Length: 359
View 1 (spheres, one colour):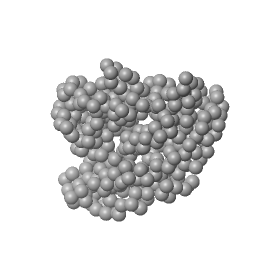
View 2 (view 1 turned 90 degrees about the horizontal axis):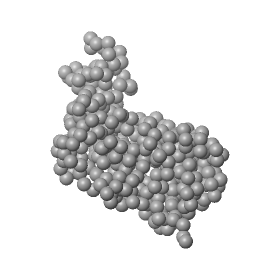
View 3 (view 1 turned 90 degrees about the vertical axis):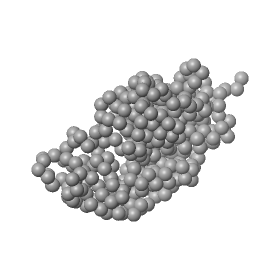
View 4 (view 1 turned 60 degrees about the vertical axis):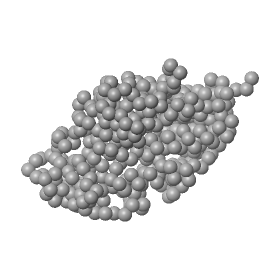
């Protein structure tokens, strides 16, 4: 009897390595696939892709599975990076990891895996999948501190049908312990952070290579000019650091925070104090909606949602749902809601889907 073939995305990190190991132990025919998604300025100074490939190859040697490297940099630039730049140019703050999962890791990767004869694809994400009433549900990872369902909310039924998350039921400490027990060389490797194509390089200098500087005024909400910004694309709602106005108090001994980017006047609007009322919103709007079940949730039911990854779930209700837009009302106003970021809706531990915040 032919073994079920699983093609797993191998990043060189400990999570995907242990995921591959567990799949092999479960009796699958496992093939590792290393995805290269970025080529511009791909140097060892900022990008770790060469070392990541070496680490992935070392692990697959120990596990005893083949490894193939594939280049998706063209698809990444077209589907992810171009939209990333367009969003920044429009004054919004996008989340490229969400797009990368939807367009590369679970689309281009899935298509390539099928060509390799895969019955399933797998990744090292901290999330879980279950079948309930004939539908596939995306669940939070068991480790709440590592749960990655927020980045996966754009997946659909077809993608979930063919996907496995082998470590979704584990805690990170357990994953590292398994890797160490099997003497995987990357058992203590530091988790990657930040945007994959930027790496550890300074974000402003990277972005300035693609979008021109357009300096303008920094103003209080009353219209007082208190400084100059270097370009609205370099700032985000709620930002405190890097404003260059720390010594200006305006009568209050509190730090300044960004509350608005006025694209028409090229003006950055700021207020003083982390708890300033202008930094909180009880209601938000979202567009480009994606619902995992294929159907929108019920209006006015009590759900929870998060408007950024590192945020506790906040009770909410969905007041209006159109074909492309929705309005979400929170029980407590949310801090520094940022257009361009994703709002992701949950019912208990089930991720229902979400959309892109517009205001």
